[in-house]
Length: 237
Image 1: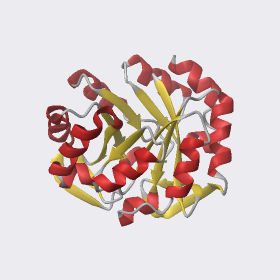
Image 2: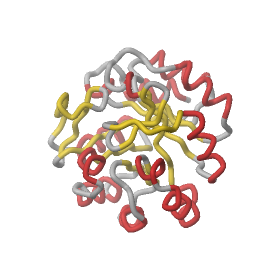
Image 3: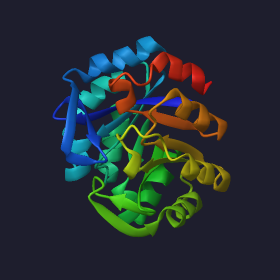
Image 4: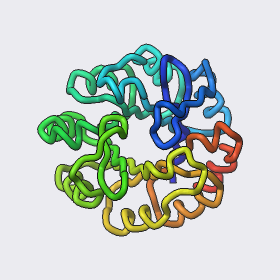
């Protein structure tokens, strides 16, 4: 199982939100590139980025920083947050990003999603952000009419390879991850499922690995020292 340590970007800083709430933001570093180099030093080979400003605005305010993170590290880099046009997808991929994550756009604009998958294949992932069983959009500020599993069924039919599934109620709460959800997703789909939200202990990592998931994202637990990244990487093997 792959481990994706996360950097959430806001005004050029590495931050974390609690359950997606912009009013509950903690700044962890003013130097995200240094954080990424720390990930490398621990042995990580993947990086999960979220542009939190982009998620709300549908723009790329942290593009210069994302470009540096992609080009000045050896990490496989993926990014989500506000990617709602082919132009933005192309911009990130040309900047050196390895995979682009579509969220709101995948829910609300199927034509764009199909076009992106047709053009870039496995470089396109879809973020499935789950709130009370439904898919949330627009930086988790709204809930769509799609249930989690109906939406995942459609993603499989369209040809999406990678799903990044977040239980919003667990995100940043340090209460453990939703193992039942990931067990069901893993059983239902032969896609690459990445667990996100609430991965807060080495036990969570071991449990997710046992479910044969493709990957897990570690966010706040790393920043507050609840998970040692080297240990997590070893446990995921």
